[in-house]
Length: 367
Ligand SMILES: Cc1ncc(COP(=O)(O)O)c(C=O)c1O
Image (cartoon, rainbow, N blue to C red; front, side):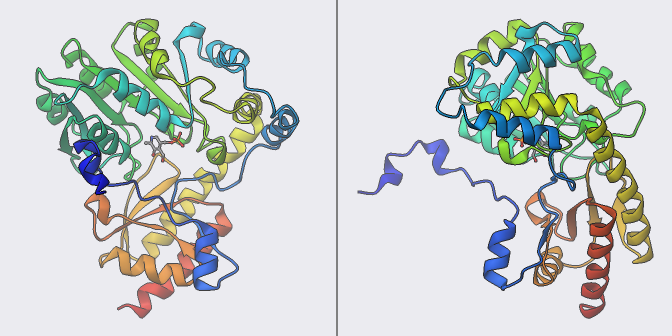
């Protein structure tokens, strides 16, 4: 039986997401012990000890399903962000909330607008729903508001904006977000995906919840995967007005977030000192990274996230392969349409030093 004949046409066309190589795989394949991964925009420090403790505590209750309303976590998020509890979305990573959004709103043939490059799941999930992907090139590595607006037609259902953008780390500042939202036609949903918001240093980064409160048709997405260091537990969150969330709740599976993830997230929110330490570490390392790259004569895109896009002026895949042999996993950006760029996580200062030394050696030997 050729099952490809029975599979939905939309699925046949899908290209699966390619994640960064796992550390264990590189250790196994290359016989290396000391491997660092700088390819998935992860937290360089780890989870908050308080989050680990909370997760361990609920493990002994693992025979029970979670509280499906996730009362405590949603209450906490609602009170921190000063919104009603029924505006709070939870998902198995913000990835799952993105899935809920397309499942809820996108019919086959609808148009979905997003920048190119941007977070790859926008394209995968839109294709899954048999939507038409309308890709708008970044302008000098930044979302191009005028072109995004021009790309909107009567068939547009959703515009996805990752702010900061993945893979460039650039942001749309508040003034431009406001212009964009003011000029977006009625009935178009704008998803502001702020997975890296906690790392932003710029003062004029939007306070997107204000737009939700003011009644703009906006969904704001955040995650515990990055600054909170809980990527392995898979938990993300978001906010929208109840007119929108009531429909998203209908496609959510019961118990979509594990009790362990919910408990860890709740404690992570309380550990403000930890979050502060993570951000300061990334900001210090970022400057170290910039100085090192400048010394190597390489251009990079100034970033507001915990990763940086570097132009290595040669095939980035070759540089990435050579770094891999030295136990360093980075992300070559050919799939993003940037064949000479690498995307590299900003680790601790020690990790940044190690990356820079390895990169210098690789570049010297590939001259
Ligand atoms: C822009 C952006 N949004 C969303 C996600 C998904 O994160 P998660 O599903 O771990 O919350 C990522 C992950 O890398 C991302 O880069």
